[in-house]
Amino acid sequence: MYQPVHLSDDIYYVGVNDRRTELFENIWPLPRGVAYNSYLINDEKVALIDTIEIGQVEKFLKKIHAIIGDKTIDYLIINHMEPDHAGAVSIIRELYPQIRIVGNKKTLPMVEGFFGINDNIIEVKEGDELDLGKHRLQFYMAPMVHWPETMVTYEASRKILFSADAFGSFGTLDGGIFDDEMDFSYFADEMRRYYSNIVGKYGSPVQKALEKLKGLSVSTIASAHGPVIRSHINEVIDLYDRWSRFDTDEGVVIAFASMYGNTEEMVEVTARALAEEGIKEIRIYDVSKTHSSFIISDIFKYKGVVLASPTYNSKLHPNMEALVNKLLHMGVKNHYLGILGSFTWAGTATKQLKEFGESLNWEIVGQPVEEKHALKKQKYDECRILGKNLAEKLISERK
Ligand code: FEO
Image (tube, rainbow, N blue to C red; front, side):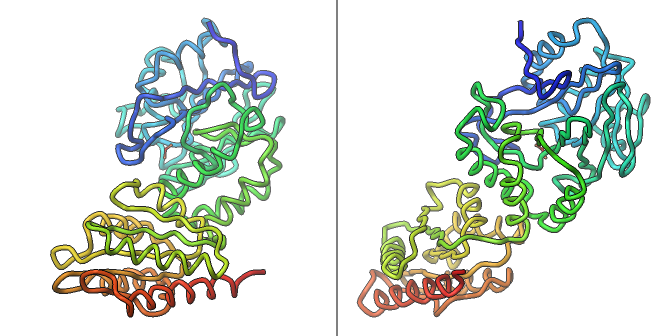
């Protein structure tokens, strides 16, 4: 039994919640799970838009059956091939052997490579349409949002954009499916964590996709993760525009590693100086306690970053090294960077953090502060000066 969820007359939500998986892509924590969204259009021709991750397939098939009964599915639209969405392609094809798989020229080799399927295929190009009866679907390519084959599907009569990963967020849909049925603020944060960690490397392709979006009138964004958005359309498009341009708010993320508390003490002093100068949004994270996905998400939100690490075996602390490697890998742009470090017999951490900042073209603010042994008066004062300098940089940009 299943009470169908309508996006409009004969367009349905058939996604599922996953509260069991600990790590998305086996990397990113899921403290409140994740939803894999799929959509079914029960027109003269039946179309399924994306599938789900295979672990939840039983619930998924029950939902489809509750809507179409013994009818067949005529088309499977594959907007995105990552297995959190394409996981049920094989079983859908086995259950509905006449189904035709719809994808673009980059999708189809993946369909063959992952599933060995190369027949009953429809290849679509930019702007092509598929007539279902009352509804017509249009296809627009959105390469690298998040894989090369990614495309989005637009239903013009109801102005629904099936957007694949775009505008998706972590978090299960706990009763509410639509953004106006819930407190959306949690999902806005988790949308940024999804965007920054999963898609954040591809700011330029996202900008191109947003340009295309401007030509469409959209009343509903039906993403492949998180709430179906119908009340925050302009807000989420604006967020995507800003994130993909690495445009940030006033605030500072301070990420530190500290074995015995000396580096952490420098962080506290710097943070206090920032606050005294009027910076209200300050987030301090211990890289050994907080998963990097949350830190990276906040770095996509705030312009100021302070990185603080002791020297460890002549290198950065390993957990700080892991964070900066991820930031390098993502090519995160447009930040101010303050640098702190400590050491016992030979300091190299601040030098390495400076090289990191320079390689991303971040503006290094003031002088890196590196203390030997415990924090003493001179370096204490330098930490305060660094905090003050960073605050002044941020405040000078107030509009
Ligand atoms: Fe939600 Fe790129 O997969």
